[in-house]
Structure formats: C-alpha cells, structure tokens
Length: 212
Ligand code: FE
Image (tube, rainbow, N blue to C red; front, side):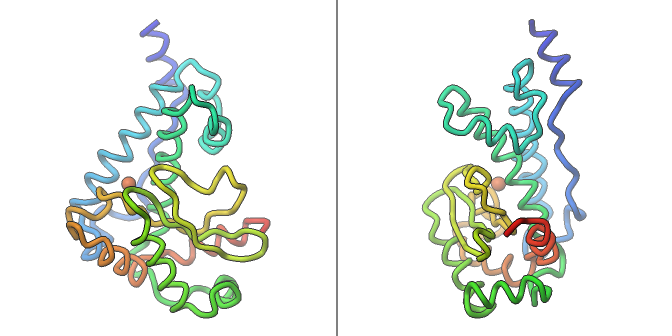
C-alpha cells in the first residue's frame, strides 16, 4: 500500500509553483531570509502534506481550486481542505506582491477603487485595518463581488473561493510572514507591503478575467 501511495504522489502531484521573482527581490521590505522560510519551508510543507493526504483519493485528480470547493464542509476532509487552502493562498500571495509595487493602480481598477472606497488612500487605510485587526493568524483580501470591490479578513487558512467572490489581492498576516523582519510589529509589515509591494497589475488581471 505504501508503495502505491508513493507512486500516486509522484505521478499526480500538486506542484509548488516557482516564485514570480528572485528570493531577495522584495528587500528591504521582506527579507530573503523570510522568503526562504515562508516559501521554502511553510508553503512547501503545505504542498507536500496535501499530496500525501490526497494520494489514492478522488481529490488526487482534481485541480487545486476544486479540492478546496469539494472538501469544504466535510469534517472528514478538514486536513485536506486546510492544506489545499494554504497551498492556494500562498501562491496567490506571492503573486499579490512584486518589486517596485504599490503606487497608483492601473486605470481599470483605479475607477473601481474610487467607486467602492472613495479614493485610494481610504482603500489603503481600510485594507491595513483589516490586516492588522485580524485576530491571530489569517489573511486580508481585496475581492470583487456583485460589481463592487470589498475588503475582507479570514481566519487561519480560510479564503474567499467557496463564496464565489473573485479574489484580487491578498496579504498573509500569519506571524511567519513577518516575524523575522518585524517581530510583533504587524502594522509596519502591512503598511510596507501596501505602500511598496502590492501588485496592482495582478489585481487588474484578476478583475478583468472575473465576471464581477
Ligand atoms: Fe504564510
């Protein structure tokens, strides 16, 4: 049995995607050391654990998003769900940041931001509040839903996928995302990412391809 599982894991694995930039590209805001642990240990472990759990099960043949949607609400699949969500969330998080990010969003999304939040500064303030205010581990999200942009925060590994809303950007506020660089100063990390690293081009692509 062990041999069969190992074979399945090898033939149909969920992949750990490469980072979209060099591991030191987000310095000085997020260090190479943090990326080394966060991507090379935390994210990698979620992917490996997920592949172990789904080997030989119906989930082994599903795309990652389907695993999340299919296992939600099933108490027997909780561990699969958590590892699938964390695998998906981290890939989305890496893409939500880029070197020389932040700044002014492209026109398509800037109009939506003004429409939904009033102006860019109000969005930034509210996004930071959601990220700082999430009690314990979790995520802050910019999502599109019903023609509007919204900000939400989710605990632990939860994400907006099951609601049908379109995620545009996310920010990881688990301590492992910032503790090596900022210790307990979550707000400093959050503001640094919003001002300097947010990948508005990625958010725009997600918006353009969504039905919202
Ligand atoms: Fe993380």
